Image 1 (cartoon, rainbow, N blue to C red):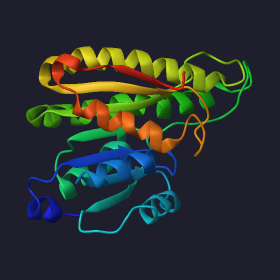
Image 2 (image 1 turned 180 degrees about the vertical axis):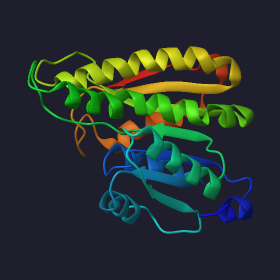
Image 3 (image 1 turned 90 degrees about the horizontal axis):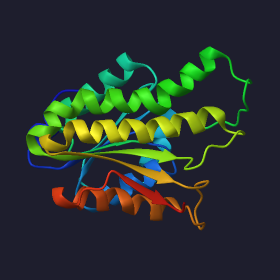
Image 4 (image 1 turned 90 degrees about the vertical axis):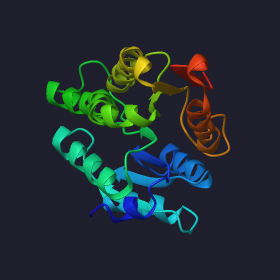
Length: 226
């Protein structure tokens, strides 16, 4: 892809979603699209991207879908650069990628733990730091999807990963606050499913609300259904 879409719509706000799956990712995409944002969707598989794209209303706003592995830094950076080339620098960056698995203490190998940590935590840091300089020029918002407000021994790697997300958010928020880049996390307190207390459409509202906040009101963590 080249910069043709960005050149055609130079003032279009862009929401770039890493981990654009059928739950929270799709709900966040729909919410920002309804507000007039172009969309960049990044997911590991073509099937996931197609499912999310097909759930979006049609219309003139651009949607760019790219495959990348959020746990592989080079793959992720390449997709981020391609999205920026196509759409322009995002106004909103959402990191929603995660390895969701049940595992108890001692069940995973070090390599499996590293893979989960790479997606759950390191990918978020990579994405935000890769785009921070460009986003700070215009001001923007980066939101990481969190979870597991209380650690659970039946979900060891996810508990560790989401604790890491909260720590990373605090550090990144402090690092970038004076650069007009709002970094926050939405902690989801239960299993995401439509029609429940953790309905993805309800959760998605936090992402737009965080983006709308004035700097003096910036929150770094919202906990949904905790």
